[in-house]
Amino acid sequence: MKANYFETILGFLTILISFIFLIKLISVNSNDSSEKYYDLNAKFLKVGGLIVGNDVKMSGVKIGVVNRVYLDDDFLANVEFKVFSNIKIPQESVVAISSDGILGNKYLSVIPNNRDSKDFFKQGDNFVNVIDFESIEDQVSKIIFLATQ
Image (cartoon, rainbow, N blue to C red; front, top):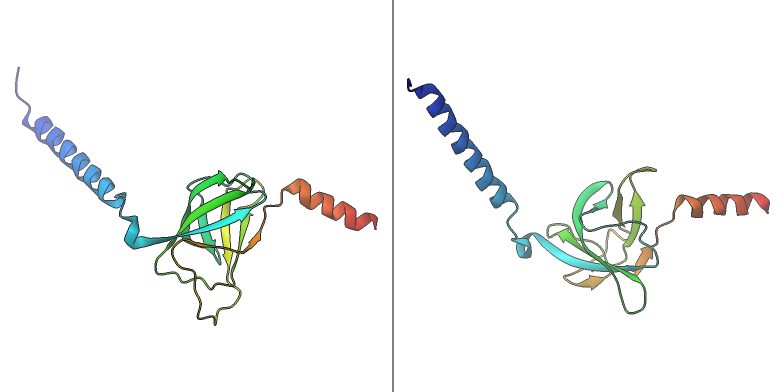
């Protein structure tokens, strides 16, 4: 057989580029979260399909990610989420579960109330002001109830 150097070099370059992409992927996804994020909590009656990995947004801009969703001892849905460390959220802010359209993903929406506040959430703080998820059925029933009165 005749040796084909071109195919050998092309195969070597393909393996080298794949290895570089693998190293880059590992370095981007490294678990160095202590410097980038701080953790916050909120308790809801209904989370409506919110899952781990959903976004946390403020004014439509991603500021974090949902870290954990579980049922606590009081049968409330406890949502733990991470917010980028450079984002300061005022203490009077509200957190709500919103949806990207009718069939879209759920996300946590942080609504800052007092932008002039000097008190900001810190690591491990709990949101007191929450707005529970309202399904389409809940919204339609409210409209029907208002229309019949």
